[in-house]
Length: 255
Image 1 (cartoon, rainbow, N blue to C red):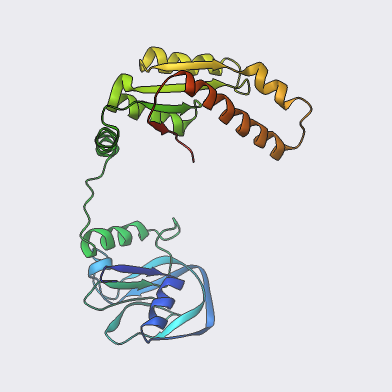
Image 2: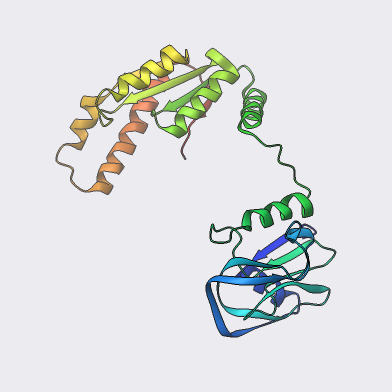
């Protein structure tokens, strides 16, 4: 692929197998807390002390890499895994027999950071603020001066989309909030107050409580309820959307 790769657990075994190494059934399985010895304290083990230092990790495997592929070398081992970690091919391919992503590997996050920052050359410049700015820019670039109709439920997904749209294109964004009568007490009023009064969003509230409750009368099966709710929401949404005139784009938080 020509990119850095980190194989974890079976990922390391697959990497070794595909590149000509040898994977065998381990005489002694390793599950749970295991101590490894670092043989090469560079790259993903940078900052882990000198060679020969010991660290606790979390294992979960019944097979092991017995022989590394050509061009690879061992960079860590344990009592029952002669190759607990390996690297090769110009220092861009790495394998770990243990799991760095779990909390039971105390310094696992450091290993992942070393891989991302030292090996892949990534930077830690991402922030939620930068995401918001990028999302707003993308929205403006896509929709231009066209209107966007946003399906707002009051949930997290659609609420985030609604606010981003409003920040990006202002009054060109129209939020359609269908009150189906299934929210918690006073929640529909709270949703309207937050988006209309706090965010100053162009909001259309449709009171459809009686419509939904009537359609759900005597419906017991949960799956059937979901089907009815979904179908009726689409029906009402389309009906009200036509009344709003020409709108080129539809925005929704959940597919």
